[in-house]
Length: 71
Picture 1 (tube, rainbow, N blue to C red):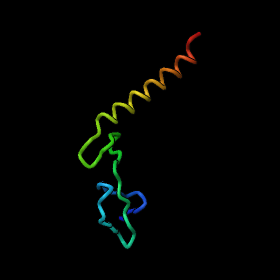
Picture 2: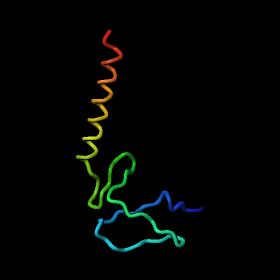
Picture 3: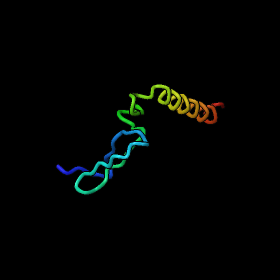
């Protein structure tokens, strides 16, 4: 099994100066990561950000349906 460094990442604060490498390639440092549809930060799941994103998508879907089904 081969790991793809381009698809890897690790959560760390932006002021963290540690560099993590895998096979001489630097693994990117992330402030947030989407795991199973939930935005994860260094302190846990960002439920507020997840809720805002879901509501924005629902409002967009409702606007789309209003345009195409108001006949």
